[in-house]
Image 1 (cartoon, rainbow, N blue to C red):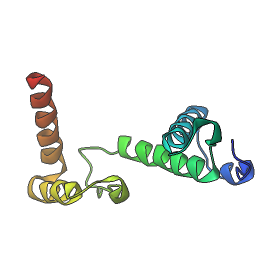
Image 2: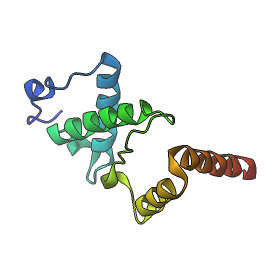
Image 3: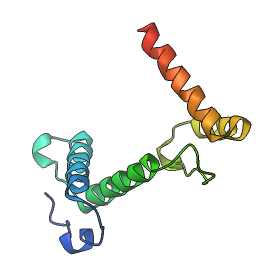
Length: 114
């Protein structure tokens, strides 16, 4: 772990033990993926903060319902290329339930082609 890790700053997140575990694993994987020799790699504060925010965002996505008229919030920073535009236009055209059905059908087609 790097010297810049501030546990008091990390304590402001109200998350469960499982969320902390997932964030720590994500932070370790992010640190390990950086360039450089393995012996010099450390988990920094920014790894922990980014990871816990990803875990929290993931939980928010899991709480969404296909039957509510709640707005859909997509993490734009994590989408590469024009995928976000395609997905939001699909939501506009078919509604959330229709978009979920289209995504499920695409996943099924990919699974069957393997």
